[in-house]
Length: 549
Image 1 (cartoon, rainbow, N blue to C red):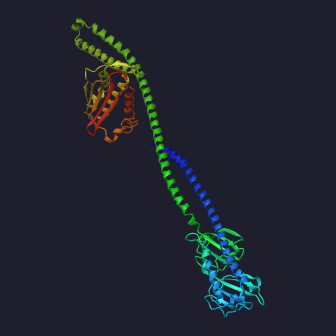
Image 2: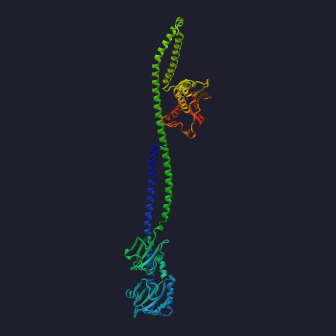
Image 3: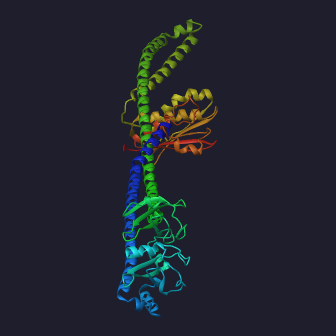
């Protein structure tokens, strides 16, 4: 395609691709953003529900253990609990439910053990100055923060006060940290999720899964967690951004922290995004291929229609020029015929005046008589030329004639005889005298044969040969124009009848001759074909039906 058609093709293709693909990708992006937003909201809601559930479970755990100790302290007597071996039985009974108690101790109002059952030797220690002891004596029930205590191991205790006579006493139990930690960590989600508890001061009450130990300080201030249950996005100490649910407990001044890596829950969405991308890519290739193919077809058809239009306009202009040429030739022929008629009449009169007396009395009479005959001969020859010109002029308008193809070939040859003789080109006539008459447009056929003869004359070198032959088949009449010129290259065979295509040097041919011949023969119901070989010449065949189609 020419440059302007290439530009049109690019604009149409890009416009079609934009119109087809931009909405497709916008819809895909909107769907992805919608589901990403929905999934993020679901993540926050699920994380919040999880924090609420885990917080309730921890508070229920503490409430159950506290209730068990309160029931035991108020149901049993001090004498009974301090009886040797009795506290061991009670610890065994309590641990049948959940194995959550490490030891039990009965402590008097001064902080000394009245009885102890557990794996540590704590009987001789006095707890009078310990914070949990003082809180229990004041409040009656106390759940402590995690501390090291005398055993130098992180733990926390639940203590209840029994107001008895003559003095109150305390039932204290140490909670198994492993059991409690497992309970809290049941809120972990995925491979990178975490769940732990910190106190108001930010100390870990249960160890986090990543980057911290129990009683160490968390890398954030608890003031960022508002009352109640909330979900925020924050950056952890390791630089990873996580969703965090903060849940303050109502029964204990502890903060439950549940971290969740949003990328883990986003993995199905990422998988869906990959599938969507592949689908969009496939759709883009399909739509793009269809747009490019149909655009190429459309622009190609438009270019072909434009070429046909230009060729038709050129053919009409050529036909108009031929009509003008024919009318001019008719005018010239008429203008020549008038003096020719006078010259012929005068020559005839001079010939009539030559008698025996004139011949006997003039020494130049024989030469005079010979010149008069030559004048008459040239007048007749010139009159024949003008008659052919008039015949060509009369045949410019489309007309159906009944004629012999040999006559058309002979007339066409007469137009190139002089130039062929001047260049030494031999014109070989092999016309079948038995050709049948056909009915067609004689002028247009003459134009085709004359064009082929002119092309042959341009193709052959000086001293070459042009052969014009004719023959008939059972349904057609064929005229062949053959030359021994340089031939047509094989790679140009498919373009030889294209408008404006020529093998001649620039300025020597318009490229319309064979295209017009092809159009004329198609209009006459016939055909034109050729055979050519490099350096061996070219043969053109014009075939017409015997009857009008």
